[in-house]
Length: 164
Image (cartoon, rainbow, N blue to C red; front, side):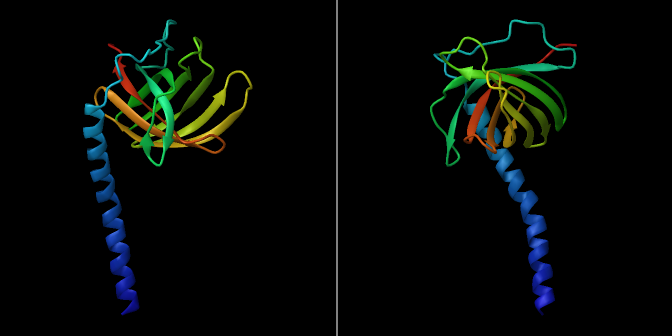
């Protein structure tokens, strides 16, 4: 009887996890369409030519994430990505609103709703690894980033695919 209960529990877990993830992703997609970058928020965009590997770019804002809630945006973020369906690579530069030039970078892989990579400071050359969880639709993105030695923060904004 104990084996039967254990098997049933594992089956419910294996079925429930993907179902819960799909509900979470669909809820996140609804939030993405309703959330836009505020008009008064200055968003810096790159002026240089995009890298050869990129098939799109993005701009947005970032800030500290407390208990899963996005708080006041603290800075701007922009970057490039190469994405196919649910797998991609990205590079982002970001800084505080009062900084004109980027002070930090974020780079890594996107696999479905997960993000993995490195986060670093250009001034001090310190670098740490991070994981992220989030989502994107045709025009907007929202990510929650958790690093080993940095606080949890969010970033959201808009992105566009380059015309080929």
